[in-house]
Image (cartoon, rainbow, N blue to C red; front, side, top):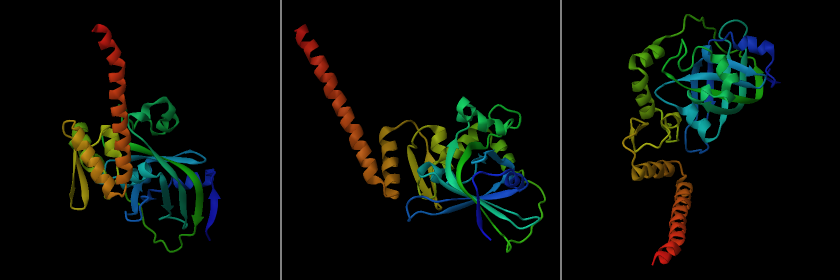
Length: 269
C-alpha cells in the first residue's frame, strides 16, 4: 500500500537506497507539446546529502534531457526499485539544480563535493566524462509495494561509458558535449551551453537531435539561434521582448554618451 514517508529521509530508507544498483529519473518541460523524459542511472554515483537533499554525478551521454528540464523548470522525480530481496519502490519528488564541474570546487558547494571525494576535477578517480552534479531538494518521499516487479540478479557495473569518454580525452569530450548536449530533443537549452558559457553560432536538426556548433563569436549567428529555438518552444515573444529591452538600453546609452560629450565639444570651440 502506498504511503508518504518523508521528508525527512530516514536512516532505514537511506541504508536501503545505498544498496540498490540502479534508479530512474523522470522530468518534463513546461510545454505540453514537448516530451516527457525517463532516464536510468547507476546508483553507484547516488548520495544522500541530508534528510531532505540527494544528489548524484551525471556523466556525458548522447542526450541531456534531465539537465534541460531542470534548467527550464526544476521539476524532478526519481524512483528506486528493489530488484533483489523484498519488493519495494521509493519515489522522491522535488526540485533539481545543476552544479558544473568547475562550480563543484566552490566553497558553498563543499558539503556536496565532499561526498564525491576522489571523483572531481584533478582527483584520483576523475573521469573527463563528468559533466555535472545533479542536486535534488526533496519535498515528498513515498513508498509503494512493487509486488509486480520481476526479480533480477546484479552481475557487475559496465565500464563502457568511462572507457568511451577517456578514449576521447578531455578536449574531444568537451567538443562532444558542446555538439550533442547543448539542447534537448525539443530544443531547450541544456548543460552543454553551461560548460561553454556561450550561445552556439549555429544549430542543425539531424535524426531527431539538435546538434550545436560553436564557431568564432558571431553576434548575428547567436541571435539567430536564440530566435529559432525560442520560436521552436513557443517563447519567441519573450526573446523579442528581451532583444527590444537590450536595444533600448544600447540606444539610451548612445544618447547619454552623446549628451555628455556635446558640452565638452562646444567648450573646445
